[in-house]
Length: 52
Figure 1: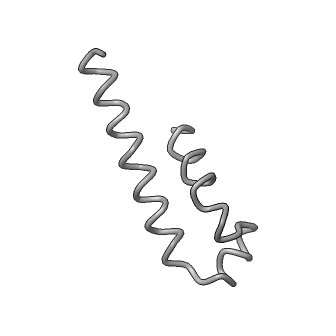
Figure 2: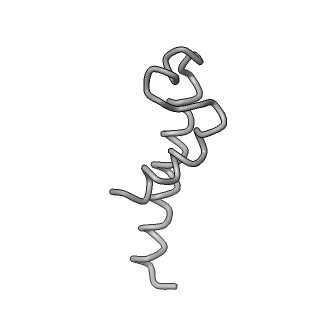
């Protein structure tokens, strides 16, 4: 694995962790307003990290 690819994966993982942390801090009502269930946080965070 090249350094560039490794750095990209690390950056993607960090974005994922930030998304999980931020979404986990929201109340169930706030998540519901966004159309996200608490069980969907992992999926949404992974999708978000890959999209950038």
